[in-house]
Length: 172
Image (cartoon, rainbow, N blue to C red; front, side, top):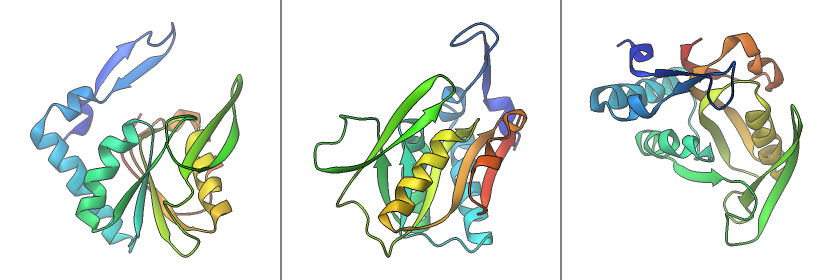
């Protein structure tokens, strides 16, 4: 299946010069969505990835992480922006191109002995995925790898990530 044909290009969003890769058209296509989740699960199994938990970053990582967790027989853990989780959290601050941001995970969501796979819709510069991996490693989890639907290869985000398996389905 040609997943690229199901991803809409939105020029100049969110600002001039940016080509936004819109996955809402992929999510809207039942066959494409099923193919996406099934293919991610197959690639994870092919690489021998058997996580206890899928960790998805806010918010589009939730959309793909939950059904992937179901397919792999794993639980799902959300990583969110500050103030979105109601219980005690672990947090990590990380650098953006212009400033910093913070990610949080519930303290009781995962323990040091757990194996996790990090999932998001897209890898661009790699900053969010790297910060998520660092947060989980700080807790003591074993990060097995990463799975993304889209990779913007020209931004070389995978170079920021640990030397672990990285699964992508579409490259730009």
